[in-house]
Length: 201
Ligand code: ITT
Image 1: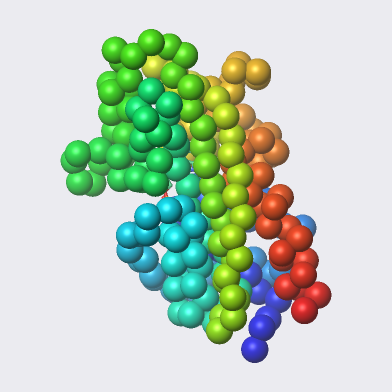
Image 2: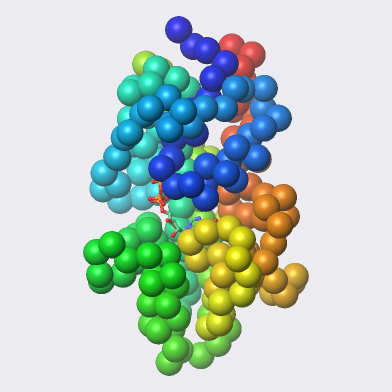
């Protein structure tokens, strides 16, 4: 049976916070994996953001019986030929590395390349209905990587991702500002018509 609950199908606490805010006016009751005691790690072995996002959304929908929204995202740096991209969460040779380690590693890999280090964040969102279909949308946000960290908001690569037109990093934005501009915000905007259709039935 389809309910009006929507499971935010991610284990990333930064994404959970942003998606709770971005989806608050959709009419769905938002549920997190922790709230339903669902502990699910999905292996991200797809060749594209879409494959990984769909795999996560379907796995969470099957495990919970709830409509599930998953996000697969990454940071693509032009001077690194689009790396780390799909592998952004694992971009470090050392297992167990932190977000701060990954930021330092990125800056280290860029230090001999000419600036500006242009880059964009990409997010693909998949919405899966249990026993039914999965639908995919995406969004991008363009900026540049800077060598020094600025700001304490957000998560992941936000302190080194500058939005040149604002002269602020993603980590210097209030969450509502990030949630107007980010790749994830744009993907959610594209997901709203799909969610409306689902809720109408
Ligand atoms: P789930 O799969 O459970 O959702 P994850 O962190 O493994 O969590 P991804 O595989 O999609 O998610 O990895 C995306 C990585 O890209 C994330 O861990 C960050 O390092 C980076 N990233 C994505 N969106 C970001 C954002 O808004 N700000 C900063 N870094 C971001």
